[in-house]
Image (cartoon, rainbow, N blue to C red; front, side, top):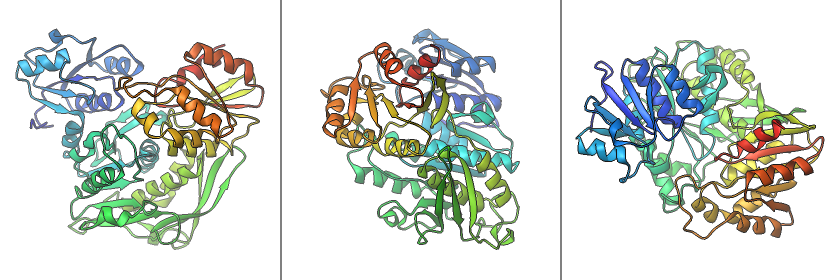
Amino acid sequence: MYQIDFNHPVSVYFVGIGGISMSGLAEVLHEAGFSVSGSDWKSSPITQVLEQKGIRIFYGEDASHITEDIDCAVLTSAVHEDNLEFAAIRQKGIPYLSRAQLLGQIMKNYRLPIAVSGTHGKTTTTSMLSEILLKADTDPTLSIGGILKSIGGNVRVGKSDFFLTEACEYTNSFLSFFPKIALILNVEEDHLDFFKDLEDIRHSFQRFAHLLPQDGALIISGDIDRWQELTEGLSCRIITYGHGSCCDYYASDIVHDEQGNVSFLLHSPGTKLTDSDGNSFGSGKEPCNSWPGDCQPLRVFLQVPGDHNVHNALAAIAAADLLGISREDTLSALKEFHGTDRRFEYKGNVNGVTIIDDYAHHPTEITATLRAAQNYPHKTLWCMFQPHTYSRTKAFMEQFAQALALADRVVLTDIYAAREKDTLGVSSQDLQNAVRKLGRDCDYFPTFEEAEKFLLTNCINGDLLITMGAGDVVKIGESLLGK
């Protein structure tokens, strides 16, 4: 396998450079002095930012983009054998890496690589921990799966030992990583176009946990069913968080304010981890034994809604404690955190209707978002949902219906195919029928224009509309706001 050497920058070409993760890695290499270029299907806000930074980008798929001076290529998982640029890369004998392999190699260049994994909550938890690291002046390098407003994008290149990234299980990409600290937020069925079943997914997370060195640490949710099986045989430190006092970190007395934002009492053990030399992992600031109240429960205030964000915050706090970051910096950063793009993101108000956008595309995520919305001011709760991929829609049809039924009114648009082709005989109308069987109003429109017209006519002053899905459903809310 080709090895990226930060001491000897070379020319690297990214096939699919406009992706949220690929663009971040391209930016990291560019900042490190590499000659970076790449291609994508069309211009986007992400590619425009890269071009402004001096990265050359080609649009469209063309073998002529692959020149002899390219030393290494990086490919997304969406690039297949019939890709013209991939064929040219192989024909010219240019070494290539997957996105995950490159990310793993980048991690090797940092003393404290931190990887956040889980079926849900990766982007929010990574963002929370990013804000904490920034508040503590650790000068971290960050790679986030969403846009974080405080850094003006999804990547930040720092000069310290800290490297924080998300770790996605799809296609086992996170098994190419080299973390010193890892977080496992949850393990559920998803990506069943790749994994066989839940046990297959659990096996992958177990393998991920075993990537940790003896002087590393795993922060894992004690709410995961049979979580001990995932950690069996680990030699590193294991820290748990979740519901109830059986976990090292847990919350009690959860309160929702008038905007749905949550606060909770934090219970924590007050210890920190040291590495194999006996040195503190992090900033050198004193851990819990010097905090006011000698680790008595403290109230944590969040500016984001939903009990699921209590869970995310607990994971971020456990990681911050592990790194020796002061509780003052941790709680201040969490109180100032207002979420990332497309995670219960307030988009605006039209005719008295509040529009929120959310990335939820799995039944568990939809349930968490709609339960959070129930604590947000509204008359009628509308969910404009765009299913994501045929395989996921078919696999979780009944679970999707049950989750969506938490809204007062449901509107569906066609399935967003993403990487798939329509070969499974499933449609949004099937989901519409499943929701209606549960006694919930559900309408389906094949085009965004039809859906917008319906919503504009039927949503009234005081209603809450959530556009939801991992595709381009966000355009519907943005279009309504422009009318």
